Image (cartoon, chains in turn orange, red):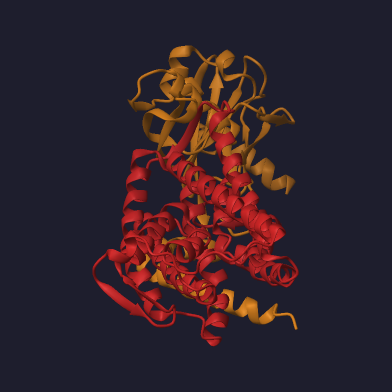
Length: 249
Length: 303
């Protein structure tokens, strides 16, 4: 073992070209799992991102930012208004191509780490998300959307920092609530040095619905006529069976 | 124990659903109604989206009414002819109701419409029930003579008369068609079978004998809720079979206990209690609309 190491060392010293290709990358990151399964018993999970940097991680030195985004969907935000004493749905704003999941974490607050122009370019911040608002124009609708998503745990804005151990190893836990949407998720790991992003790595993972929940939803969407008939038959059967089972006397 | 509802797309405690099913089933067994008018509001209160609560509520009512219909059928208490006429009105009504529902969903006013329908219908029916049963109780105390059996009114002058032998009636088909239509619309929008409205309508409006009323109303309820389930599944996609089956499992057990207890209660007192219960649900929903909401903004999917 020692001999082998010495041999490699000798080789790399002897060939500068080779030394470059073997040199450790400035950033290496990986996910604990590439597939999260949503079953009928799913109550939530997490995305665990881990990795290492070439140099020591400290404030002002090497720093790490993790950004995860889920598939985009559209949402409608409705404002409740009082009409004749009743609270009813009033004006609404539609948001298209909104990330259903969004989570950001950094070794320290991202705003302190990067210039605002670079932060805006990389969209590292809830306020920097490019949301197209149709319908009602007031900014309260956007705030309500962000508040609602954060309350539901679907938008996570630096709730937990990226943890560092041993100077160069880091890991981040991004929580996924039970209501998480299925689809492809993108995780970006950025290495920040001197207020600049110097390296980045992109990872992906899939959140898939499996088991009975998946097949029921698929049938309901793909063959609604069949599903409707099945619902009628199953409910009638269950009602009849139940009355036979629980009949007293 | 959390269970994921595939259509509602949320996790709910399975024991909670079984409990709700049992409670509603117990009350429906006690009072002899389907219980859909209690179930849908309770589901909305625990956070199930209105559309899913209505679709699955109709599906649950179908299951809960099947065994009752079979029992009544065996005893020969179903007036098939009257049931069919009601059903024709009911099919047209529920088809129109589902269209109305889909339109309301696009307009973003489903929650409002469902709540208003419940408040108006339950408020009216509850008040009528309480009034009628209190009168009956008072009359019994005074030991006054019985009311007239058949009152002749403007309804008996309508054309297209038909003989309903089992109900011992010779009346126009227009009133039962209209009654069926209205119940069908309400069934689609509210996710109820409509038994709690159909029974008084059959007794007081159509003048049917009490013996065949329950069986015939169950006949109408089973087929109309089947139609609503089908149309909601196809047009709105809001029937959650997992939710339905969990509610049914609790419901059929509760109904048997409720029915056993119901035989020990007197008719008028039972009706008065049911009326109070109906009024209480209406009041709870009304309060929900009048108080200042906790969140002034609501986020929903694009319909």
